[in-house]
Image 1 (cartoon, rainbow, N blue to C red):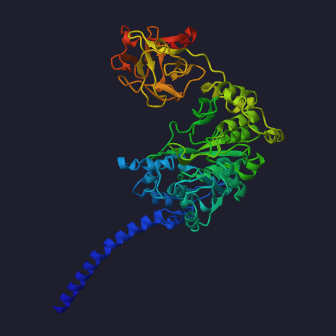
Image 2 (cartoon, rainbow, N blue to C red):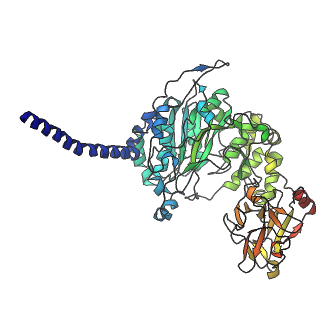
Length: 603
């Protein structure tokens, strides 16, 4: 009996101990994950780089070309990422409240650092690659790379998350080093605290400029210190995705004169949700004001496998990989370019015209935070105009004239001494810009012709019924089109006013006269919706319009017409009614030939 009582007491004691111990295990687990995700040790904790220190051993296949290829995926790391839950995990948007949307969170960074700080440094991302990418093999022997990350007053968590994502999702043998280049930051967290943090990461080193140099020269400083066979440039607010690095290095291993760019995904500056850009895989291009553009891959370039690398005339800018020796053979960046801007054109034109090539790699994906605005001032002002003039003069030959026609202020701007750059071009025996336009960017004029085709109609758009004109008060996306008294009836100067509109060759309606249109277009979502401005995308759709013989402005997507209400000044979509004067519009000037061409085959 006593033995039985003793056993019962032992069982009860074990039960009580379990009740006390197990909750603490859970608390320790939560504490451990939190500490590892927010402290210098996070890179070695769950989801950190030590979890990805070895690529799973996979069978090697030998191709017909004799090259041994292997699967570089780290499946253990992928499984761990798939199991992660919490704020921002799997790239999900952080659930914001109104109090989270504080101005100060943006003021110092251009994105919501408050949200960034509440998301794990090792957060998981959705694998949004095409399924074919998951089956691809890459060369067993790939060059290693130095990752160059320039920064100036970057947020703590966004910078560290960039580094963590690279270490967590890259085969360690392919990372020679990560070089953080501080462009004279004055934030305390980027000084001793950053040095201390990075002592835990043997592959990371920090370089610092002695004065504010700007993005271009800061990248050059990092590149000049690089030890890897390949230089990979990243911005300081990125997140590398699954198996992002081998597809880039594989193309360089095949041809060292190839510059390669990952697909750049969007990390929302507000809630940090992760997703693709509109249109996803597209070619990099530019218009003749030298704004970067993305254009569809033309049918002539479409392949059966959408994951194959494709040629791109121009890179987006800060995310690319290049053979280190080839980069310096090309002269690196032009050291005459100041601070930032234009460098993506210079390096793109140079590589294509001087014997290399440039590709976008669909199986390599890197997320990037597109800032709400640039949060800091550049000493001496922004040198973008000077940089673009310099690129045009050195590389664009007679095509520079098309830039000056649209940017007449560039024509007499001093771009500094360009002798060394022109000598470099001669020494490398580079081709002409005409060759570039004919052989590389041959599809660009379809979207951005050097000589603007004639517009179909322009000037004020006056309503027949009310005699009032369409007007835009604010030239920004989301602004409504309103009905107002016509400027010319008020005796005001008209051609710089918000009533000057152009129905151009793209069959969209833009603010401005034909030679100086803004980048916002009339847009309507559906029947009965208001007509608003939206960033011009050149893809027709919601921005496609027809000006018909009955004077109506017809919207094919919604099968409706622009209507108006003088009493409340609204401009909106409605069922087409050829007898309604409120749906009839008169352009100040029209080109009958172009209009007929536009309307051919329409009702």
